[in-house]
Image 1 (tube, each protein chain N blue to C red):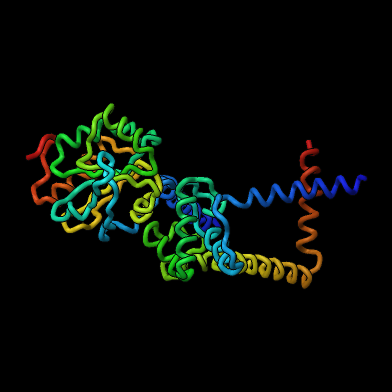
Image 2 (image 1 turned 120 degrees about the horizontal axis):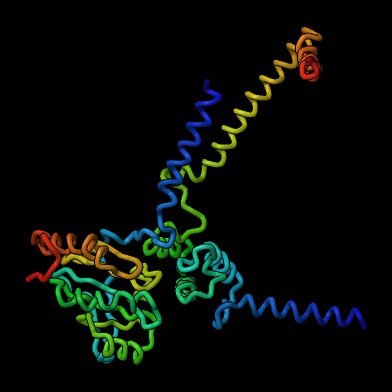
Length: 162
Length: 185
Protein backbone atom coordinates (compact mmCIF):
# COMPACT_ATOMS: atom_id res chain seq x y z
CA UNK A 1 0.00 0.00 0.00
CA UNK A 2 2.78 2.36 1.01
CA UNK A 3 4.70 1.49 -2.13
CA UNK A 4 1.65 2.15 -4.31
CA UNK A 5 1.20 5.56 -2.71
CA UNK A 6 4.86 6.38 -3.23
CA UNK A 7 4.61 5.39 -6.90
CA UNK A 8 1.52 7.51 -7.34
CA UNK A 9 3.22 10.49 -5.67
CA UNK A 10 6.24 10.04 -7.92
CA UNK A 11 4.00 9.89 -10.98
CA UNK A 12 2.31 13.14 -9.96
CA UNK A 13 5.67 14.85 -9.39
CA UNK A 14 6.98 13.64 -12.75
CA UNK A 15 3.87 14.81 -14.57
CA UNK A 16 4.30 18.19 -12.91
CA UNK A 17 7.91 18.33 -14.04
CA UNK A 18 6.93 17.64 -17.63
CA UNK A 19 4.18 20.23 -17.78
CA UNK A 20 6.54 22.76 -16.19
CA UNK A 21 9.05 21.98 -18.92
CA UNK A 22 6.67 22.85 -21.76
CA UNK A 23 6.89 26.61 -21.40
CA UNK A 24 5.11 27.33 -24.68
CA UNK A 25 1.68 26.07 -25.66
CA UNK A 26 3.11 25.07 -29.05
CA UNK A 27 3.97 21.42 -29.61
CA UNK A 28 7.61 20.43 -29.83
CA UNK A 29 9.32 19.05 -32.92
CA UNK A 30 8.42 15.51 -33.99
CA UNK A 31 12.03 14.97 -34.97
CA UNK A 32 14.02 14.40 -31.74
CA UNK A 33 17.18 15.76 -33.43
CA UNK A 34 15.48 19.08 -34.18
CA UNK A 35 14.08 19.16 -30.66
CA UNK A 36 17.54 18.57 -29.22
CA UNK A 37 18.96 21.43 -31.31
CA UNK A 38 16.08 23.66 -30.24
CA UNK A 39 16.68 22.83 -26.57
CA UNK A 40 20.41 23.47 -26.87
CA UNK A 41 20.03 26.74 -28.81
CA UNK A 42 17.41 28.24 -26.54
CA UNK A 43 19.36 27.30 -23.43
CA UNK A 44 22.44 29.08 -24.79
CA UNK A 45 20.65 32.29 -25.78
CA UNK A 46 20.36 34.88 -23.08
CA UNK A 47 17.02 36.39 -22.17
CA UNK A 48 17.60 40.12 -22.64
CA UNK A 49 14.84 41.21 -20.30
CA UNK A 50 15.82 38.97 -17.38
CA UNK A 51 19.55 38.92 -17.97
CA UNK A 52 20.41 36.01 -15.71
CA UNK A 53 18.32 33.40 -17.51
CA UNK A 54 18.24 31.77 -20.91
CA UNK A 55 15.32 32.23 -23.26
CA UNK A 56 14.50 28.54 -22.71
CA UNK A 57 13.46 29.18 -19.14
CA UNK A 58 12.02 32.69 -19.26
CA UNK A 59 8.39 33.70 -19.30
CA UNK A 60 9.19 37.18 -20.64
CA UNK A 61 7.23 38.08 -23.77
CA UNK A 62 10.41 38.81 -25.70
CA UNK A 63 11.85 35.40 -24.74
CA UNK A 64 8.69 33.74 -26.07
CA UNK A 65 9.04 35.73 -29.31
CA UNK A 66 12.68 34.71 -29.64
CA UNK A 67 11.80 31.05 -29.00
CA UNK A 68 9.22 31.33 -31.76
CA UNK A 69 11.88 32.75 -34.10
CA UNK A 70 14.29 29.91 -33.24
CA UNK A 71 11.55 27.36 -33.81
CA UNK A 72 10.53 28.76 -37.19
CA UNK A 73 14.16 29.09 -38.34
CA UNK A 74 14.86 25.47 -37.36
CA UNK A 75 11.74 24.38 -39.20
CA UNK A 76 12.94 26.34 -42.22
CA UNK A 77 16.17 24.33 -42.21
CA UNK A 78 18.54 27.02 -40.94
CA UNK A 79 21.81 25.89 -39.35
CA UNK A 80 22.67 26.59 -35.71
CA UNK A 81 25.29 29.11 -36.82
CA UNK A 82 22.78 30.96 -38.97
CA UNK A 83 20.36 31.14 -36.06
CA UNK A 84 23.08 32.40 -33.70
CA UNK A 85 24.10 34.99 -36.29
CA UNK A 86 20.48 36.11 -36.60
CA UNK A 87 20.52 36.81 -32.86
CA UNK A 88 23.94 38.49 -32.68
CA UNK A 89 23.15 40.69 -35.70
CA UNK A 90 20.29 42.12 -33.69
CA UNK A 91 21.39 41.90 -30.07
CA UNK A 92 25.17 41.59 -30.22
CA UNK A 93 27.37 38.98 -28.55
CA UNK A 94 25.56 39.77 -25.31
CA UNK A 95 22.80 37.40 -26.35
CA UNK A 96 25.17 34.42 -26.42
CA UNK A 97 25.88 32.55 -23.20
CA UNK A 98 28.81 30.92 -25.00
CA UNK A 99 30.87 33.86 -26.22
CA UNK A 100 32.65 33.56 -29.59
CA UNK A 101 36.34 32.72 -29.68
CA UNK A 102 37.99 35.81 -31.18
CA UNK A 103 40.94 38.10 -30.36
CA UNK A 104 38.66 40.47 -28.42
CA UNK A 105 37.47 37.61 -26.20
CA UNK A 106 40.90 36.01 -25.64
CA UNK A 107 41.18 37.57 -22.22
CA UNK A 108 37.82 36.06 -21.35
CA UNK A 109 38.75 32.58 -22.53
CA UNK A 110 42.39 32.53 -21.42
CA UNK A 111 41.94 34.71 -18.32
CA UNK A 112 41.26 31.88 -15.88
CA UNK A 113 44.26 29.84 -17.15
CA UNK A 114 46.38 33.00 -16.97
CA UNK A 115 45.41 33.61 -13.36
CA UNK A 116 45.97 29.94 -12.53
CA UNK A 117 49.50 30.14 -14.00
CA UNK A 118 50.18 33.38 -12.15
CA UNK A 119 48.91 31.96 -8.86
CA UNK A 120 50.83 28.75 -9.45
CA UNK A 121 54.02 30.70 -10.10
CA UNK A 122 53.61 32.74 -6.92
CA UNK A 123 52.79 29.62 -4.89
CA UNK A 124 55.82 27.83 -6.39
CA UNK A 125 58.11 30.74 -5.47
CA UNK A 126 56.84 30.89 -1.90
CA UNK A 127 57.02 27.13 -1.39
CA UNK A 128 60.50 26.79 -2.89
CA UNK A 129 61.77 29.70 -0.78
CA UNK A 130 60.39 28.10 2.38
CA UNK A 131 61.87 24.77 1.34
CA UNK A 132 65.27 26.43 0.92
CA UNK A 133 64.90 27.98 4.38
CA UNK A 134 64.04 24.63 5.94
CA UNK A 135 66.99 23.05 4.11
CA UNK A 136 69.40 25.66 5.46
CA UNK A 137 67.97 25.05 8.94
CA UNK A 138 68.80 21.39 8.60
CA UNK A 139 72.38 22.24 7.60
CA UNK A 140 72.85 24.36 10.66
CA UNK A 141 71.05 22.51 13.44
CA UNK A 142 69.99 24.43 16.44
CA UNK A 143 70.47 27.98 15.32
CA UNK A 144 67.04 29.16 14.00
CA UNK A 145 65.04 26.73 16.11
CA UNK A 146 66.85 27.80 19.16
CA UNK A 147 66.20 31.39 18.24
CA UNK A 148 62.43 30.80 17.98
CA UNK A 149 62.43 28.91 21.24
CA UNK A 150 64.66 31.52 22.71
CA UNK A 151 62.19 34.24 21.75
CA UNK A 152 59.29 32.37 23.20
CA UNK A 153 61.11 31.69 26.38
CA UNK A 154 62.71 35.07 26.46
CA UNK A 155 59.63 37.24 26.52
CA UNK A 156 57.92 36.02 29.70
CA UNK A 157 61.23 36.29 31.46
CA UNK A 158 61.58 39.90 30.47
CA UNK A 159 58.09 40.79 31.62
CA UNK A 160 58.72 39.15 34.90
CA UNK A 161 61.90 41.05 35.41
CA UNK A 162 61.51 43.91 37.84
CA UNK B 1 60.16 46.26 -1.29
CA UNK B 2 58.28 44.39 -4.06
CA UNK B 3 56.40 42.59 -1.34
CA UNK B 4 54.60 45.86 -0.61
CA UNK B 5 54.51 47.48 -4.04
CA UNK B 6 52.95 44.56 -5.94
CA UNK B 7 49.87 44.03 -3.73
CA UNK B 8 49.37 47.79 -3.61
CA UNK B 9 49.58 48.02 -7.40
CA UNK B 10 47.12 45.14 -7.68
CA UNK B 11 44.76 46.89 -5.33
CA UNK B 12 45.08 50.11 -7.33
CA UNK B 13 44.23 48.22 -10.54
CA UNK B 14 41.15 46.73 -8.91
CA UNK B 15 40.02 50.16 -7.72
CA UNK B 16 40.30 51.53 -11.26
CA UNK B 17 38.51 48.49 -12.74
CA UNK B 18 35.66 48.75 -10.24
CA UNK B 19 35.47 52.53 -10.60
CA UNK B 20 34.71 52.20 -14.30
CA UNK B 21 32.97 48.83 -14.16
CA UNK B 22 30.45 49.76 -11.49
CA UNK B 23 29.41 52.94 -13.28
CA UNK B 24 28.09 50.97 -16.21
CA UNK B 25 24.41 50.20 -16.35
CA UNK B 26 24.08 46.45 -16.92
CA UNK B 27 20.56 46.80 -18.31
CA UNK B 28 21.81 48.89 -21.25
CA UNK B 29 23.06 46.49 -23.90
CA UNK B 30 25.11 48.10 -26.67
CA UNK B 31 23.33 47.68 -29.99
CA UNK B 32 25.26 46.17 -32.90
CA UNK B 33 22.88 48.05 -35.23
CA UNK B 34 24.37 51.52 -34.75
CA UNK B 35 25.82 52.61 -38.09
CA UNK B 36 24.04 49.78 -39.87
CA UNK B 37 21.09 50.10 -42.25
CA UNK B 38 17.78 50.32 -40.43
CA UNK B 39 15.69 47.19 -41.05
CA UNK B 40 12.87 48.00 -43.44
CA UNK B 41 9.38 47.18 -42.24
CA UNK B 42 5.83 47.48 -43.44
CA UNK B 43 3.16 47.09 -40.78
CA UNK B 44 -0.53 47.95 -40.39
CA UNK B 45 -1.31 51.53 -39.45
CA UNK B 46 -2.81 51.81 -35.98
CA UNK B 47 -5.46 54.27 -37.13
CA UNK B 48 -6.19 52.55 -40.43
CA UNK B 49 -5.37 48.80 -40.30
CA UNK B 50 -5.99 48.48 -44.06
CA UNK B 51 -3.14 50.90 -44.75
CA UNK B 52 0.53 50.15 -44.12
CA UNK B 53 3.20 52.16 -42.37
CA UNK B 54 6.65 51.62 -43.84
CA UNK B 55 9.91 53.32 -42.94
CA UNK B 56 10.87 52.98 -46.62
CA UNK B 57 8.56 55.96 -47.23
CA UNK B 58 10.74 58.07 -44.96
CA UNK B 59 13.93 57.51 -46.90
CA UNK B 60 15.53 60.74 -47.94
CA UNK B 61 15.15 62.47 -44.60
CA UNK B 62 16.11 61.60 -41.05
CA UNK B 63 13.41 60.24 -38.79
CA UNK B 64 12.90 59.01 -35.26
CA UNK B 65 11.41 55.66 -34.35
CA UNK B 66 9.89 55.30 -30.90
CA UNK B 67 8.97 51.85 -29.57
CA UNK B 68 6.11 51.97 -27.10
CA UNK B 69 3.16 50.16 -25.61
CA UNK B 70 0.34 51.07 -23.27
CA UNK B 71 1.62 48.38 -20.88
CA UNK B 72 4.89 50.27 -20.51
CA UNK B 73 5.25 52.65 -17.58
CA UNK B 74 8.35 54.36 -18.98
CA UNK B 75 6.40 55.20 -22.14
CA UNK B 76 3.87 57.11 -20.07
CA UNK B 77 6.74 58.96 -18.38
CA UNK B 78 8.27 60.17 -21.61
CA UNK B 79 5.02 60.84 -23.46
CA UNK B 80 4.69 64.52 -22.59
CA UNK B 81 8.24 65.11 -23.77
CA UNK B 82 7.49 63.23 -27.01
CA UNK B 83 4.54 65.56 -27.61
CA UNK B 84 6.84 68.51 -27.09
CA UNK B 85 9.49 67.05 -29.39
CA UNK B 86 6.86 66.48 -32.08
CA UNK B 87 6.06 70.19 -31.91
CA UNK B 88 9.62 71.45 -32.12
CA UNK B 89 11.73 68.77 -33.82
CA UNK B 90 12.50 69.12 -37.52
CA UNK B 91 12.31 65.37 -38.06
CA UNK B 92 9.20 63.18 -37.96
CA UNK B 93 8.69 60.46 -35.37
CA UNK B 94 7.28 57.05 -36.26
CA UNK B 95 5.63 55.12 -33.47
CA UNK B 96 6.11 51.36 -33.21
CA UNK B 97 3.29 50.06 -31.06
CA UNK B 98 4.85 46.89 -29.68
CA UNK B 99 2.81 43.86 -28.57
CA UNK B 100 -0.12 45.99 -27.54
CA UNK B 101 -3.90 46.13 -27.74
CA UNK B 102 -4.75 48.46 -30.63
CA UNK B 103 -7.91 49.80 -28.95
CA UNK B 104 -5.96 50.69 -25.81
CA UNK B 105 -3.22 52.24 -27.94
CA UNK B 106 -5.69 54.45 -29.80
CA UNK B 107 -7.34 55.52 -26.54
CA UNK B 108 -3.88 56.35 -25.11
CA UNK B 109 -3.00 58.59 -28.04
CA UNK B 110 -6.39 60.26 -27.94
CA UNK B 111 -6.10 60.95 -24.26
CA UNK B 112 -2.44 61.96 -24.00
CA UNK B 113 -1.85 63.44 -27.44
CA UNK B 114 -0.30 61.86 -30.51
CA UNK B 115 3.34 62.76 -31.20
CA UNK B 116 3.68 60.27 -34.06
CA UNK B 117 3.59 61.07 -37.77
CA UNK B 118 2.32 57.50 -38.10
CA UNK B 119 2.00 54.54 -35.78
CA UNK B 120 2.87 51.02 -36.94
CA UNK B 121 1.35 48.05 -35.14
CA UNK B 122 3.82 45.27 -34.33
CA UNK B 123 1.52 42.78 -32.69
CA UNK B 124 3.83 39.78 -33.12
CA UNK B 125 7.01 41.61 -32.23
CA UNK B 126 8.86 40.48 -35.38
CA UNK B 127 9.90 44.00 -36.43
CA UNK B 128 10.96 44.78 -32.86
CA UNK B 129 13.30 41.76 -32.96
CA UNK B 130 14.75 42.95 -36.29
CA UNK B 131 15.51 46.26 -34.62
CA UNK B 132 17.10 44.55 -31.64
CA UNK B 133 14.46 45.92 -29.28
CA UNK B 134 14.48 44.30 -25.86
CA UNK B 135 12.34 46.68 -23.86
CA UNK B 136 10.16 49.71 -24.16
CA UNK B 137 10.56 52.58 -24.56
CA UNK B 138 13.39 52.63 -27.06
CA UNK B 139 14.06 55.53 -29.40
CA UNK B 140 16.09 55.34 -32.61
CA UNK B 141 17.42 58.09 -34.84
CA UNK B 142 17.77 57.10 -38.49
CA UNK B 143 19.65 59.14 -41.09
CA UNK B 144 18.31 60.22 -44.49
CA UNK B 145 20.11 57.32 -46.17
CA UNK B 146 18.59 54.84 -43.76
CA UNK B 147 21.44 54.31 -41.28
CA UNK B 148 20.74 53.94 -37.58
CA UNK B 149 22.60 56.87 -36.01
CA UNK B 150 21.62 56.49 -32.40
CA UNK B 151 19.58 54.37 -30.05
CA UNK B 152 18.33 55.25 -26.61
CA UNK B 153 17.01 52.62 -24.21
CA UNK B 154 14.73 53.76 -21.36
CA UNK B 155 12.47 56.82 -21.15
CA UNK B 156 13.72 59.99 -22.82
CA UNK B 157 14.41 62.99 -20.67
CA UNK B 158 15.02 66.55 -21.76
CA UNK B 159 18.71 66.25 -20.83
CA UNK B 160 19.18 63.08 -22.87
CA UNK B 161 17.24 64.54 -25.79
CA UNK B 162 19.33 67.70 -25.88
CA UNK B 163 22.62 65.97 -25.23
CA UNK B 164 22.33 62.89 -27.47
CA UNK B 165 19.69 63.59 -30.08
CA UNK B 166 19.65 67.32 -30.90
CA UNK B 167 23.31 67.54 -32.07
CA UNK B 168 22.98 64.36 -34.12
CA UNK B 169 19.74 65.56 -35.72
CA UNK B 170 21.31 68.91 -36.53
CA UNK B 171 24.27 67.18 -38.12
CA UNK B 172 21.97 64.80 -39.99
CA UNK B 173 19.92 67.57 -41.56
CA UNK B 174 23.00 69.67 -42.16
CA UNK B 175 22.30 72.73 -40.04
CA UNK B 176 24.45 73.93 -37.15
CA UNK B 177 23.27 72.86 -33.70
CA UNK B 178 21.07 75.52 -32.13
CA UNK B 179 22.70 77.54 -29.40
CA UNK B 180 19.69 77.14 -27.15
CA UNK B 181 17.01 74.50 -27.27
CA UNK B 182 13.96 75.75 -29.05
CA UNK B 183 11.93 75.66 -32.19
CA UNK B 184 13.74 75.06 -35.44
CA UNK B 185 12.60 75.80 -38.95
